[in-house]
Each structure stands twice: as C-alpha cells, then as structure tokens.
Amino acid sequence: MRGDLIRDMAVLLAATLLLGTAANLIPARRLAWWGAGQQPPQAGVDFQWMDVHSANEARQALPNAVVIDTRSSAAYREGRIPGAIHLSYTDLGQGLPGELEERLRRADLVLLYGDSEDADTEQLAAQELRRWGLAPPYIVAGGLPAWRVAGLPLESDSEGAP
Amino acid sequence: MRGIVELGRHPWLHRILAVALGAIFLYAAHDKILDPRPLITIIWGYRLVPPQFTNLIAIYLPWMELLVGLGLLTGIGRRAAAGWATVLLVCFTAALLINAVRGINVACGCFSTSAQDVQNAWLLALRDLPMLAAAVLLTFARPRQQPPLRPGAPRSSPSPT
Image 1 (tube, rainbow over the protein chains, first blue to last red):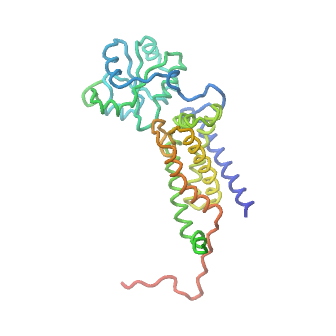
Image 2: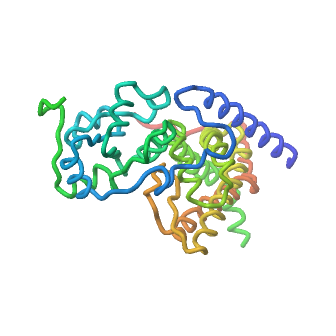
Image 3: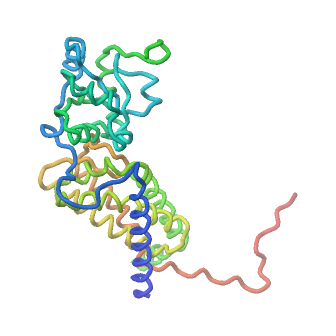
C-alpha cells in the first residue's frame, strides 16, 4: 500500500514537471529557469517608492514626466491618473516600442502604478524597464486604490481623454 | 478514543474533507497559473530560498497545486494528491513559522499573488493547521469500506406521488 502511494505521488510529480515545463515554454509567460540575476524586484535597486501626493505634484511640475498604468486595459479605460499611458507587463516581454523607449529615456520622471489589490506587476514592470537600461522608475505606493482614497484627480475614456 | 478513530475513517468525512481541501488548492492555484511572475516576489519575501531557486518554484508550484486540487476533487489518485498536499502544507507552515519566529510578517501568497498582502505570520501558520490535519488524515487513514447491500434489500424507499 505504501508502495502504491509513493508510486502515485511520483506520477503526480512527473505530471507537475511536465505541465510546468510546457507552460513555461509559452513566450508570453516565460520565466528564466535558473541562475542568479533573476531576483525579484527590489525597492531602492529596481525602483523607488513615491507616495500619492508627491507623485501628483511631481507629474504636474515636471514637463517630461511619464506616468504608466500597468493594470489591465479595461481597468485603465475605466479610470486612471490623468495623462497616464497603458503598458502591460506582458507586452514588455516583446520589447519596448521605439517611440515609447525614446520618450522614457528623455523623461524627467517615470512613474508606474498598479492595483495593489491585484498583483505587483508594476514592480516587475519597473524591473523590466531597468533591464532595458532605463533609470529606476518610481512606483506609486498603494497604487490607484491609494490614489482614489486620497481624492486625487482621475480621468477615464468616458470623459473623452486619449 | 475508538469513536474518534472510527470517525476519522468515515467515508463521508473523507469525501467532504477531500472536496473542501481540493477546492482550496484549486482556488490557490488559479491566480498563480494565470501569471506566475508575481509569485517570484512572494517566494523571495520568505527569505528562505536562494535566488537561483525562486523561479523554479514559481514555475512548478502552481501546477502542483492544480493537480493536487483536481486529484482531491475527482478522487483520481486521491491519496497521492493528499500526500502532496501534506508535503506542501508542511513546507508552507514551516516557512510561515520560521518567519513568525524571525518577527517578519510575510505576504503569504496562499490565495493572492500580491506581495503587499502582508499578514501576521503566526495567524497564517495557524490557518494552515486544519488543512494540514485534513491532508494527513486523507493520506494515512484509510476510509472504512461501506458494507455491501444485502441481496433483496430495497435500494431506496419509494416516494409517494
């Protein structure tokens, strides 16, 4: 009986290895298998935190500030920080669009935000931008929920914003 | 004592626990399978695994959770699934307890892939214990066989219309 259990557990492990390997071969969701340099994003290295009020002042004061929304397209259309552009972390895997890369390189400030209730994709996106040779961007602490709570301005597609 | 042992072998208790635990594992796997990348941050946050291994865990753990959930729910390879559930829950609980002792509250990564979802590590470990008990029971206590129906015995009482 114990032999059966060990055999069945080995089969389940083999199925896991098979499925995990196959899923990780899909380019859009690929992770590096192994090796140093794959550390998760770290504050102070890959990005800096910025509170919502400082972020709001900085985006208005700096003429070349770029604000990036890393949430889903639907959430972006529903409501975003004024002037924010949408950039999904998955899209970054395909490379930065040339125009955007140029804009980011010239930016006085790159500010990313996400939805802290969802996932920390903004941190991963910041790390990806760093890997593209850009200066560490800033991330809005608390993301859009904190922005909303602070009562700061938002725009949406229904208001005719771009 | 004998009553507790008998209860632990009750087939219906096994079914209920397997379905409940299976559903929990499926729910836990859902977000991680859709996008395993945020899981790296979570695993890193435990400060237990060398950086070289974090990606491997993020690649394979969600699929293990999925298969464990399916095994428990469907009954196909249920004991093996329960066995892996035991292994996983022992690892999760140990990781949480180590961080609780260190005084670090971690983002659990249990049902959400948000690294900002930091909770009290002691409470998270405590939450794992009933699930661990269920997994151990399903792995090591064999359910009592249902007595066969007597020939000629009615299968169900007819309902008056």
